[in-house]
Image (cartoon, rainbow, N blue to C red; front, side, top):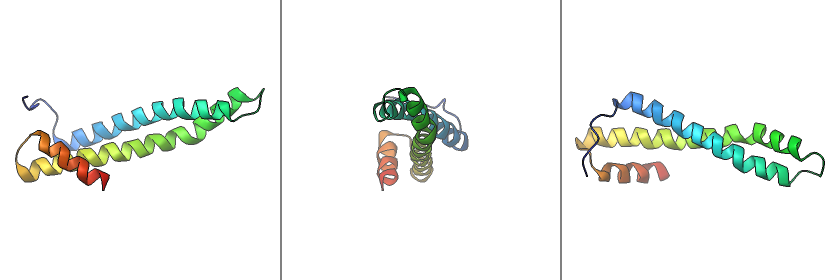
Length: 100
């Protein structure tokens, strides 16, 4: 397994990973809360209930995913800078620090 040396510098990677994680969280939140809002609404108002739940909760889920992705990327870049190596142990350490 070889290291990926074509990746952007760390400040750009952190922002890119934050945006990607936010987008994944919003998409997942739309699916999850759309179904949840649909099921919990009374008959005849299910579409409106699904849309209301999506508008209320999907951005929150996206923000949470974005923070987790940004923190992981921040810790990954920090560990790379401290260790001066690019190996799988960096991701393990970054995941440990991200998880708390």
